[in-house]
Image 1 (cartoon, helix red, strand yellow):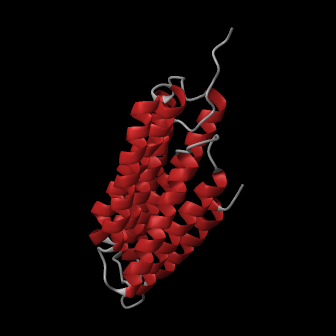
Image 2: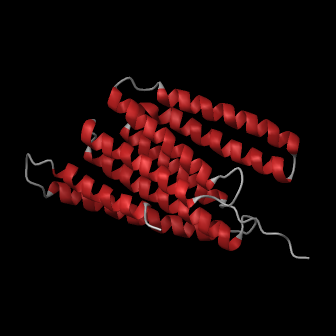
Amino acid sequence: MSEAVTRRPVRLSALVSLLAASVAVSLIEPAATVGMFVMVVGIAVTREGAHRFRETNRLFGTAALGIGGIVSIAGVGLAATSVTRVPGMVEVGLGIVGLGCLGLGTLPLRGTGSRLLVKLGNAAILLCIVGGGLFQDAGTIPLLLSCAALVLSWDAAENSINVGEQLGRESKTWPVESAHLGVTAVVGGIAVVSGLVVRDLGTPGLPLHSVVFLLVALVFLTLALHD
């Protein structure tokens, strides 16, 4: 009898997606960096606990679920209390919502992942970045890097679900995932360099980086909402 294949999102791309999303938010609100990364750890531990509870060791799984939940809540608290300005609070709130949606979409407690939650999560983080560009006067480099991180997050999340559906989580998928993520990272790096070149060609006094950022953000949002 053939072994059943688990059609859930693969781990490497899912984790990269969460890390990239947390980096995107942290570049806009550096004070929330610790909280965002603690959230990532909590989400990953919770997911692994759910896997162990369902398939191998219920005692270990229950403990991991509890620890992961506590760590996730602690991360939310750290991130939420890291800023006091209203714009910053809104941006961090969007980042928390986005990371939570990505966690549920790529590291599901049940089911095979959710592209809808991935889209909602990345859309929330995109709004966080837009807020940083419009209301916080974030620099050009942080904006470009956060956009590149967002693209990596979205692409890694989609790839996690796709590879899981096609090959199953038990397969040795990390070479395929690594190659895909590497190409995406290179494309993101080219986009950042291109944005810096365009900025340097701008007219002095003209907030060109804001215009470029909004155009890029519109493209990213279109991609994120595209089926």
